[in-house]
Amino acid sequence: MTRTTTSRPLRVREIPEGESLRGFIDLQWRINQGDPQWVAPLRMSVTGALDRKKHPFHRHADVAYFVAERGGEIVGRVAAIVNHAHNEFHEEKTGFFGLFEAEDDAGVASALLDAAAAWLAERGMERMRGPVNFSTNEEIASPGVLIEGFDTPPAAMMTHNPPYYEALMEGAGLEKSKDLTAFWLVSDGGPPARLVKGFERALEREGATIRPLDLKRFRQEVDTIKAIYNSAWSRNWGFVPMSDAEFEHMAKDFRPIVDPALCLIAEVDGEPVGFSLGIPNIHEAMRHIPSGRLFPFGLFKFLWYRRRIRGLRVITLGFTPKYQHSGLGAAFYLRTWLSGTARGYDRAEASWILEDNLDMARPLERMGGRIYKRYRIYERAI
Image (cartoon, rainbow, N blue to C red; front, side, top):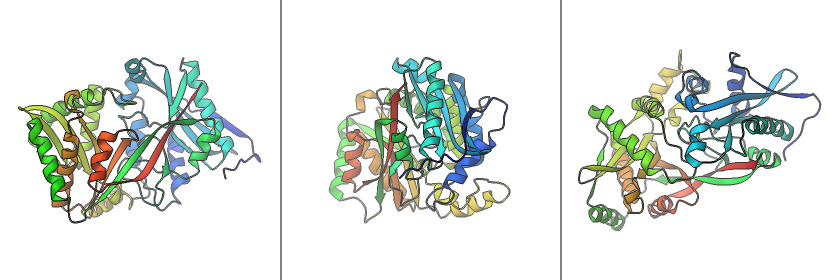
């Protein structure tokens, strides 16, 4: 049951530009550090994403950071976001909230979300949706509140939060907008031969080939993937095209951890028509750095435990519109899985997948995957 604390007055304020965000950032540790499944993010990554002057997301968005304070102590936080790129693409007036953290206190959550809603309404927004951190492209952590799957740690870049967050959202008048799912697969003797043959026939039928990323042509490969990405997801719920600056920023972040064998590009007659991105599940190493600080000693721990990573996460997979219902997605999953097991990985998460995206869910189920985590995005009129 969500509690409400009234012994001391609560104050919600916007952090003005120029004031340190350290308290805003630190709260995530205080709220979650007692949870054995939580994996601390890298502080330098969070700090960089929140920097309005440096991170490319802020070039097309307005963001305000709010904290709830009681007795001089920060007990909750939230970001209010107007993503102009989203609203221009979808021709709507939707504001977002994200980076939500709070004590188990309905009053704190409601006050924070009301403050975010008021800020968004002042800027002409008609509804508030979230948590989204900051968008479906910039994943400080994945969108949504974890509502199922608290007994296992999150995969790389995925959200983990206390179980009471669901009640806080509902108590603040928010309703379900969309659920996101995460599938879990384990190596168990490999996929059935009939499944392999079926997926191979899908490739033959479309005249398609699948190849790994070529790191020697990294610059050209990034341009290829960017073109596919902005075409492939254009009809997806919540999609926002990535700007050149955002894509460059993402490519720079991913390059140190990319395994070319897990980043695949599909071609038909030499023309790229799809790609998928899998990465080693670096959370298996990061969970040994609870402070979130790489320096001075965290880096050595990360490098040591990175060698022991046996899980991977399939982050994204998509095709240009002509091939979106061709069955090639199943072939991508299978090729990623076979490449991963050949390199010593024995488990994988495929996430996040919209709850109604059957084209992605069904092939995973055929490969033995099961939904083991569920995340909920909420919204309300403002």
